[in-house]
Amino acid sequence: MHKGRLEAFSDGVIAIIITIMVLELKIPHTDTLSALLPMTPIFLSYILSFVNVAIYWNNHHHLMQAAQKVNGPILWANMILLFALSLFPFATAWMGENHFSSTPVAFYGMALIFAATAYTLLVKALIVYHGENSVLATAIGSDTKGKVSLLLYAVSIPLAFFLPSFSCLLYAAVAIMWLVPDKRIEKVLH
Image 1: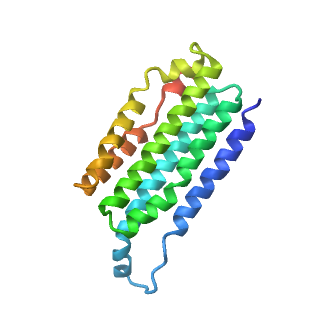
Image 2: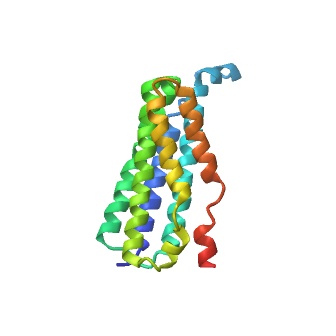
């Protein structure tokens, strides 16, 4: 089956996720810059989540560029990824509203590891369908960056109960690691 509908649906869901996150930013009732100060944790959590969602959108786009077609397991793997990403607005708001306290930070990490695992499942489903010698399989290789990301998330979740700020730094470190454009698929396609 053609991949176009999967791409269009995914783009729409991701756009809605970003919209929901920005709607959680409440407008202050005064016109002074000091009115923004209490919103700092909320805004920081929004920035982190926006960057993460943007990273997923970019990487999803690259995956679909390398894919020729999709099948049922790929559609379901994609739906699991979208479900995981749909938890970001809640996790983001909870973490920001509670000033990065332990339980919300740990929950945010669970949303991150769920999304990373779902993305990994989508990659694997695409590789199974397209074959171990496909452009996608060649481009992904051993996926060291993906494995390191999962490991850092796994470490960060229990750490959040002792050092939530350090967990947030690890979440940001993973995002920064992925901000550097992942050229694996582009290199193989061009």
